[in-house]
Amino acid sequence: MVKRSVPFLLLLLTSCGHPDGVMTPVAISASAPPTSKVAMLVATTREPSGDPGTLFNGERSAKPHLTQITVSIPPKREPGTVQWPKQIPPNPATDFAVTNVQQIDTVEQGRAWFGQHVNGGHALVFIHGFNNTYEDSVFRLAQIVNDSKMQATPVLFTWPSRAEITAYQYDKESTNYSRTALEQALRTLAADPDVKDITVMAHSMGTWLAMESLRQMGIRDGHVDPKIHNVILASPDIDIQVFAKQFVEMGEPRPKFTIFVSQDDKALAVSSFITGRVSRLGAINPAEEPYRSKLEKAGITAIDLTKVKTGDGLNHGKFAESPEIVQLIGQRLMTGQTLTDSKVTLGQGITAVVGGTVTNIGTVAAATVAAPVTIMEQPLQKRRKPLPADETLGGDLKPQTLTQ
Image (cartoon, rainbow, N blue to C red; front, side, top):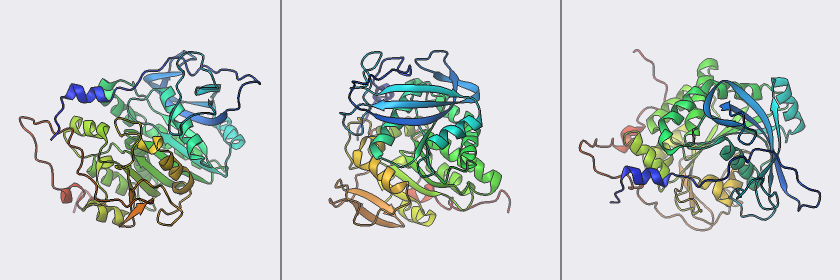
């Protein structure tokens, strides 16, 4: 059993710093080496910072804001990584750099932007996780879009995170604060005639916001908007039982759900501790019962990334930092393709639970996965006995009325 103090575990979550002011646009000279460009639409419930170098801070805004941003990506880099500048202004030859920022004031202006950047009518809406600044989320989405080679127009929804380790509860409440704004953003996007289908991809705490907004939409209309075809939840920081309720309450028909899980996710281990040792959806072993049967019944595809190795010491961002996984997202999951044919060759022994069957994705056979991470097994004076696995989902994947 591995024991760690809470302060030590929180220290694990500290992200590496980077210079402030990266959102100020830079010009690229004609003689500079060619770079890739990612243009995105950014919706936020953050408060404007009044500083062009940051644009928005971690406080909550009374109204949402919309911005179009273009990010330049250097030609020589390792896929799955973000090249943060070491100094300001950034050097586009070696760093991620913002080349264009323009505020959008009306829905019509937003639709005009989308019409100019339409990519087959496909839209990707990305929601970031805990401890992210505005620029963190912008650069991460640019990296995902570039490395996945996805054929879709990227839309970022960034909510008010203070990007502080001690602000976990503030960030969680900020996702609740942003639920209706994300729902409205999805409705506005779906109402655009240039949009044929939408993929919602959320990470970590952002998966809670995504599920809550989709649940709200389902409660209002009886179902999620039919243009929302796919929902991808990466390292979902959601109580398993709560997820089951959210899933049911969004109504039918539902989008196709894919979840990325990893039993060695240290960030989710900390989250489990903070939330009273409640199991998080992103840390389950989907090949074990009762999860396998419940996932099959719900039609949810689960991809186990426990064996995937990346440079992320917390094992919390594997979906974006593994070149193979991010390409799997962009070229197969977003297009609704299955993961069971011979064209999927990742070669890392990744396990997928598709339709109730355990499938090895790649050339290396996936053995039984290890037990869930025990990093949080610090004894408490009044430690609650965890619920048996068959009680964590139970009958929650079916509608239940308040009265008999």
